[in-house]
Length: 617
Image 1 (cartoon, rainbow, N blue to C red):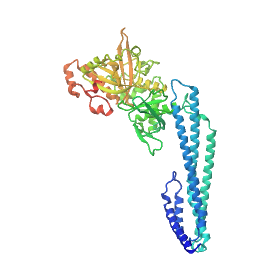
Image 2 (image 1 turned 135 degrees about the vertical axis):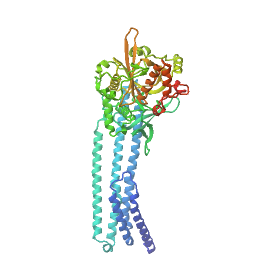
Image 3 (image 1 turned 60 degrees about the vertical axis):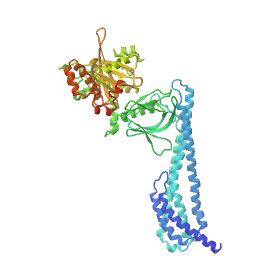
Image 4 (image 1 turned 90 degrees about the horizontal axis):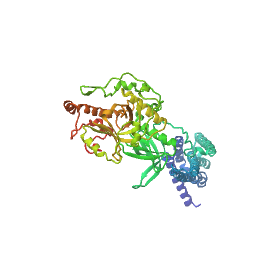
């Protein structure tokens, strides 16, 4: 090597050494997928940067040593370790796509016309795809974990060889460095060996985990393997997992997309694959959730907004996920996540619903203290006077043991009359709508609420509102015991003549109750959205029948009770012109002379009460 060439190489060596010192200081700015335990490495590299600056004047003929002790390990780290992680990531992506394809095929299995052989084949295909995905993910995560150790060693091993080569190569190194440097290099060497030992232990642990995975039973990966008796947690206040989201692509065409959903406070979030964070899909506060039949798919449910508008439709992959999602959304919609102890509140809410159907008189005691019975039989001076409870009655005197509960109010007319004794049902083709509209125009009160029918049952007494609380308890308990989530949504029109349940889609009256036959009405104290009333009818043969109807409202039940009470006051006041005039002065009126509830009692909770177009639904 001639002197000019040698000098040029020395200059290149000096420039490279200076650049190396800068790179060591910039190492802490590098971002790895999982950064942990790097503080000691960074401080060590900072010390190495000072050492490199001191050795810079001695670097003249280290090209071969650098190629063997520094360049080669770095190249191996880049081409071997990083390439391996990239390859395993691609394999994991392919396995995930294959699993999505198999899950899409499984989700399209028909519910009504099941083919057990086809179902078994598709389920086995899903299990194999999941096993493959799980194995590839473990290999990928194992490589990522190993990278966290190797990337810490990959910079220190070259620097260790580089520094030792410099000291051994130059005799002047002994004069420049003290024994403290030898102890430092020894500690770095020990640290590298320690990290290598941790890597070996982690690799052995992952190897054992993969062996356990291979030996696991196939049922672990089979969807809906415990359909007969799944372990369902009904006290959830948060939930996460994959669901199929129904999207409309045309007037009659739809697509289903498998996405990751999770709850955050009172919001339902969705995070597509590859997204950095999730986005808001649905506000769950005061919403309702119910099971639906959708395109012959199993485990579908729909979330409805507080205004009664149909929201999103989702599909779970198993019965357990299906019921837990419904319970979690139902718990969140009641805003128990805002309480001091939301888990305890959820347990209490579900325990109340799961109480045995045997009579428990204490259910209504606390209601009697704050809410006297809304008994409308006692009238003095043409005004309604709530009567005091005649004492807590035995539940068997209120509702006969074994009384059947009707969960669906949409029935054929004859069957409905048999079970509920006289509730008038309009013609389903709408021929009676004209008379209904005439009645609305003559009515002094029109108030509409969005409600969902929970159940109805025959009762033996209407002397106290405790019969309503007992009916609420039995209906909720029966729904919880039999896993009934479906609810029929209606518009409850309260007028000064009757209560009408209107189909929100067709505007056809489902059933109607004369206001004079409503003898009791009350709202639940704890769950303020629960409302119930008792209808007392006289049969043709002189017999009397009483039925309790329980609803869940989007607004507070007390507001519905207020509207019913106002309607009854109007009925009584119409008998005396002076009393009617006095009542009209005390209650606000619309432009067309009809009674109107105050805005702060209805509009804030989504109640429809406009005196114009909406009130004439």
